[in-house]
Image (cartoon, rainbow, N blue to C red; front, side, top):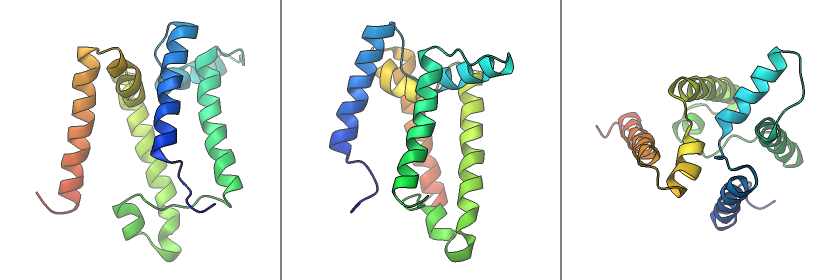
Amino acid sequence: MEHHQLAWWIAGPVLGLCVVAVRLLFNARLGVTGGFSELIGKLSRGSVRFDWRGWFALGVLLGGTLFAVLAGGPDFHGYGWLTDTFTGGARWVIAPILVAAGTLIGYGAKLSGGCTSGNGLSGNALVSPASLAATATFFGTAIAVSFVIKGLI
């Protein structure tokens, strides 16, 4: 594989088609937090009878894992300051940081009743004012944090 990332001009339309398909098939919004909640809820009750959201979350997890395995293992690059800071023998630190960050994002999404993918993909496609405001907040916060990390603010 020459480049280990799917091209934007392929990924964007595929995600758009997924948003439309989920809306048409299930009359629902596409988002990862709903799938994660479905998995946790059913597994905590001892059931593996998931609805489409649970299978979607499993597909995201297993698809990412399969891609990493086929690409020769996890290759941490392109994570900005993480991959610039933790090099050589310290690269292992990147994985726990990403897991902790993902956990915090998931907790915040569950607490607030929506996630970045649900608001950014489905909510914006529906021109939901709340989703537009949420997505602007996500992007604004990411930009501000990146400026702080780079010492520009």
